Structures are given as structure tokens and as C-alpha cells.
Amino acid sequence: MQSDKNIKSLIRKYISGQYTPAELEEIREFIAKPGSQQLFDEVLEEQGTGLIPEDDIDQPHLEDKLKFFYQKLHQQSQKEIPEQAPRVVSIFNKRYLRHVAIWTVFILGAAIYGITRFRKVPVKEQIAFHEQVNPLGQRSKIVLPDSSEVYLGAGSRLHYPDKFASNTREISLEGEAFFQVTKNPHKPFIIHTGTVQTRVLGTSFKIDAFKNQPLSVSVATGKVRVDDVRGNKIKSLAVLIPGQMVTYHNSQAITSAVVITEVSDWKDALLSFHNRSLKDVTLILERWYNVKILYRKPAIANKKISVALQADMPLNKIMKVLAATAHFDFIISGQQVNIN
Image (cartoon, rainbow, N blue to C red; front, top):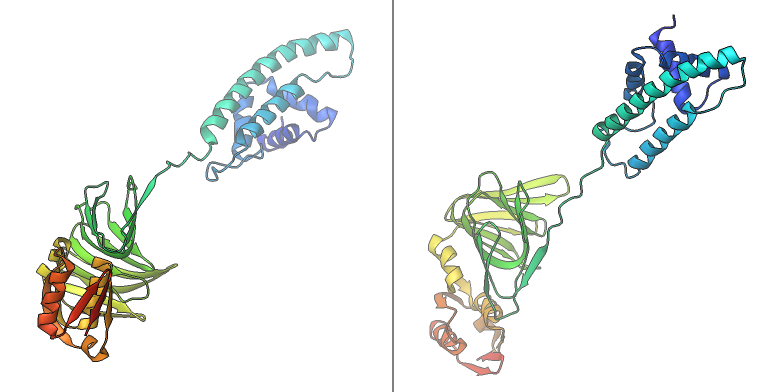
């Protein structure tokens, strides 16, 4: 009696079509015996069909491969053998009936095996994205799918999905915004601003991330982690708690203190400045009011001031407050302000 190893070798030859007439007769005799299907299954498990195991599930032509294999088995099982004496033919006919019955079971078993063992990659769910773009002079409030709120500043852009992924909540920001993030310890909230990622679980904070300007993150409540991510390299910039901010510029991160109320009041248009140059203040006002502010005397632009401005007031009132603080005259002409 041949060993299982030899029988498996015959099975592989039969499946590949590389067998002699004598080997064909041997395999047919084996098929008629009990327990033959088990060895066929073992050959399949050893990739005798040429199919790839389940670990590699990206097989777009899998169904065609299986169909071709089953068709091949069926055609080979029905091949005519050379004419033989009547008695031999009679014996073969009896064996052939048993052979067909076993092959029917085998093919059905192989089909079930193929369905359960081999599968295609499931189609990924399509997620729609939205983009809110605020022109200069316009602000907006966006409520995200998890009920988190974003107060988007003027001249800023927010990119976000209509549905968050199962394990994270990720959005992209260009410009400035204040965030009130709904707490969810199982789904971190991540804001992408260029290569910098700000990660939270549930908190309130403000981000300034305009192009070609220093990036800053300031925290009102909770804890915030800020990293610079470039490929597989992660550079930790800061882990912030309420009353702290980090400024990142020219690959340098500087952590400093910030007044919590000033961080949260920004969403209500209250702008606070401490020992800032007049030029810094008016650059921000240009964005909020969509105007151009020009200086006749450059020395005035360098004056340091501390002031709080309610930036939802008319521009002429804002300019009167600044003029009284920094001691200058101004003229508003359309979308241009001239400081004398």
C-alpha cells in the first residue's frame, strides 16, 4: 500500500495535469477508497491549487481561479480511457459511478472550502468630507459629527469628515480656531496643521496656524499634546495644561504662560494683547475686518501696547480705542486705514 506522501504526490500531479496513464489509473483507484477526500483537503491546505491562503486576501480574480479549478476537475474526471476488453470496461463502469459520486462530494467540499478559506477584501466605507473656508472679515461656528464645536476665525480653513472613523477623530486646520472638544477617551481628537499634530481626548483650546507664521497652541481646559510628525519621526513639542501655550517657529518650541480667560474669550471676539507692538495688533485687525492698515511713520508701528478689544464692534470704534492707547491719528477710507 502506498504511503500518504506518495498519494499526495499523485494528487498534486493530477491537479496540475502532469501525470502518466499509469498514474491516472492509480489516482482513480484511490478515489474509490474511503477516506480519500481527507488527503485531497490536506493537499489543498498545502496550496496544491495554487491559490494563496487567507493571509493574502487581496485576490481580485479568486472566483475565476476557483471556477477554472473546479471545471478542470470535472473535465478530467470525464476523460475517456483507451478501449479495453468488455469485462474490464464493465468493472471500470462500476468504479466510475463510485468515482463520480466521490468527486461530486469532493468538488462540493472544495467549493465550501474555497468560500470560507479564501475571500476578497471588503469594500471600504466611503466617507464624505466638508471644507469650511472663511474669507477675511468673516468668522463661523462649526458643529462636528461628535458634537464638538469649532469657532473658525477669519481667513481660515477647516477640513473635516461627515462621520469620524471608529478609533480616531481627525480634522485639518489652516488658520486659527477655538475648539471645544467632546470628551471621548476611546477616540482621540487630532488636529492636523501642516506637519504639527495636536492631540486631545476632550478639552478646550485655541490654535493659530497661518502659513509662514509661528504656530501656537494655547489651552483653556484639559490637557493637550503637540507633536511635529514627519513620516515615521515624531518630535514632541509640548504637553500642555490649562494656562499654558506653546509657540513653534524655525524648529524651536517655546512653552509659556497664558491667561485662561483670554484663550476662551477669543471665541466671543474679545482680543487681548499684552505688551505687543501696534503692528502685531493691526495685522490681526486686518484679518478680522478685511482691511489694509498703513503707517505713515514706521516708528508708530513699533510702539508696545496692552489693550483689550471687543472685535465685533465697528472698525471706527476699535481704531478710536487704539488711537487713545498708542497716541496716533487715523483716517478710514473704504477698506484702507491710514495711521499718522
